[in-house]
Length: 292
Image 1 (cartoon, helix red, strand yellow):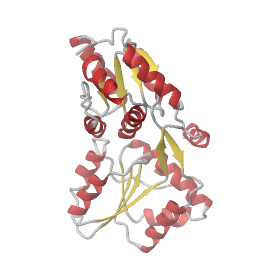
Image 2: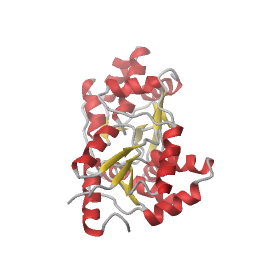
Image 3: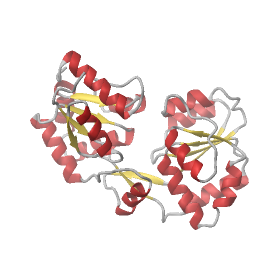
Image 4: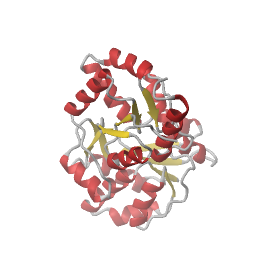
């Protein structure tokens, strides 16, 4: 099982270097070109104030944390507003669900235990977990990872719950310097995206210098193809990806976003993690070669 020296584009900014190392381990050549960054809302306290008001005025039966960065950012804001201890006490009286181990680890730093982590670390996995409970007339809070999911909210509401949604950061092509420092403080390696890097990535895809491209989040997909549309290269890029390049997705949510843009997914791992994604790509290349 080997990538056989193919060039693999990495569109993630967080953990980009880690993913590059995995590509090298499997015998590939990493091409790091992040398409997504974050804009920190640390100075915009409106979301945090709404969060505080909501959690103090309402009994929240379940609270879902989607990312470690969301936890970190939120709690830094709470600390600045001298509301951290109050919120921690309220969260200890609710069922806490973390989408993956990362938010659970951040919560643990503040003495908050996570009751459940889904086996499948996706929004779909969270829904499959929480739907097992009686959600009628229950209040559910969600700290999102920059992007909200209307479909997820509708599903929860269809089971009789009331949903309160919050976010402590948003996505952008540019990774703000302040946001980069936060990622560094949390222990993430990161590579900042720029419009120039994305433009060169598209050019290299079109010129045939890249054999496979990986996507690890729906927002990374959105930013990449929105940029292509704004720069009048979407149609040719779509055709190139669908006929000459292996498109690799980390999981179902990312795959659905790719499909919305008319992009066919060639490889998606059974376990929705980065290492599994590259292993699955190596299996594919070993079996079928680098071209469809």
